[in-house]
Length: 113
Image 1 (cartoon, rainbow, N blue to C red):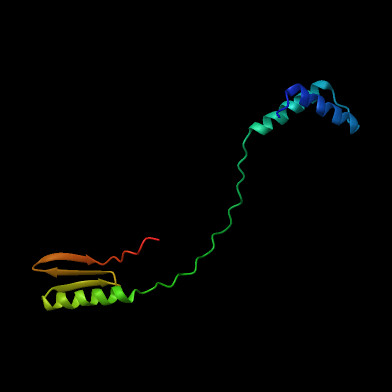
Image 2 (image 1 turned 180 degrees about the vertical axis):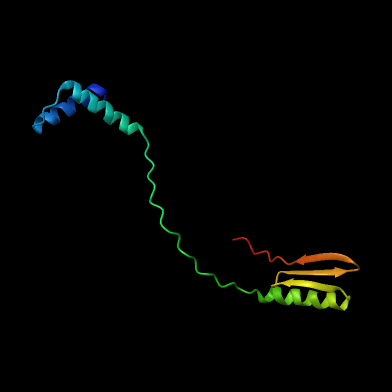
């Protein structure tokens, strides 16, 4: 249940008198306005930025199955007298065949959970 401005001011005035503080009705009304206003204001707190921690380099997992498949493709291309330019880990082969530049990229699609 929300209190009205005058109810809150009366409550603040009575609490101040009980604590032995000298407060006028006008001052209690001002305090009540500030208290109600403070409830409407949203505060967003930010933590202090600290130095970023250096991440440890993750060890890359080599996919043996993909490596085997790409190795087979590489042997096929050699048999077709293609000029292999670059092999990128077990994912990609770049080559030239009949004066045309190609790239084959192997993507393993995982099962949906």
